[in-house]
Length: 531
Image (cartoon, rainbow, N blue to C red; front, side, top):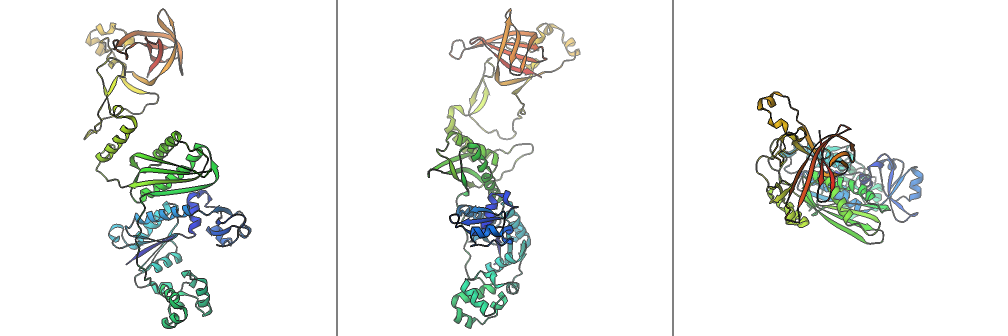
């Protein structure tokens, strides 16, 4: 068996930097206990170089390293970082082992045909661990202990040839094995300084003097690991967590915390080629209570922006009842089956996923409010109905581009009006009586109506039943020319009766626009602006 070992130096401190990358340039120490009697658990390289060591009291650590940043220990944070490291390994091999905090072993059997030689596999693992914010070293050997030792002794990726494990370990210091203090002291009194010295001791005498602990240490020094490989079974969800030393009382502050959590989850999902179809948010409150929300995603996704928007909308509708001191965010992973797409087309969702989306939408808004818009046989502007939704097979319909301020309607001369005229109404009816040849010989200019949805309420001054001044938002001025009214109405026999007058007017500020007067309410609206 060939194994790759992922090892993250100063793992507990690295888990802190993964959550707070802005601290990477500063010395950081992780403490446990109650101030001022806290002791050091782990420290970053900068703090380690200054003399900070595990077990050191906080006062001594701060004296050895001026400017030391203290962060409290968090088992949940460490576990989230370990699961992220395991997820990276699962993205390369289906057989991985959760060996210790910051240590993951990967079975390389059969991966050569997928990723190339062992060095390339190690580079892939190192690159992906850097992507999740954990700078791991990779060692590759024929045993777990040899691979871990190679990772600790090497720089980035170290590959030990089969059969060369003992010779690689021989010059390594005895402290590499992390033996019990009493066993290490006994071997030091015997003059054992390196793993090669330990490997050459007589096995019978070593067992008689030190028992099974001494024999196990010698086996490790020779690169032999008798333990069986224990495959790791991933949990049914991915989880990120973060605690605070202060209370969060505003939604904006909570969203600023959730965004990096979502980003880390998205990286983990992308690494193992899955997506999330459900988010679970658990909030720890200052009064000791909890606030949990489950957000079902309409479509499996890994994009941070839509997931953040859905969480914000849910929290706005269901706010917690007390300040927040702890956040746990979980994502349920699902595999998304790849499909063949076409050029210049957005990928269509799978039928099964589309059915789930439609069912969720129907539960939210009701089946009567869900469907495809369809024009109805009516003169009423914007009249439409809903047909049962069905995804068209083959080509997708061309849609109108996004236009600030409203929708784009065809040129005014192409709009069919109830009066039967297909000409620009501002030009009057006289032009329609001219000959076809004269119309073709005269150059025409197509203008476009930018319809405002919703229409903007307007204040209109009237004189002799005609508009003379308009004020509607940014549009304001005297009417210097106008055509209308074009009067339409319908459904007078029902409660949905409507009646409206339409005007096309040119204003003194150069704006050409369409006004609508609701004859039932006598309200004026700015319905659109001509380009």
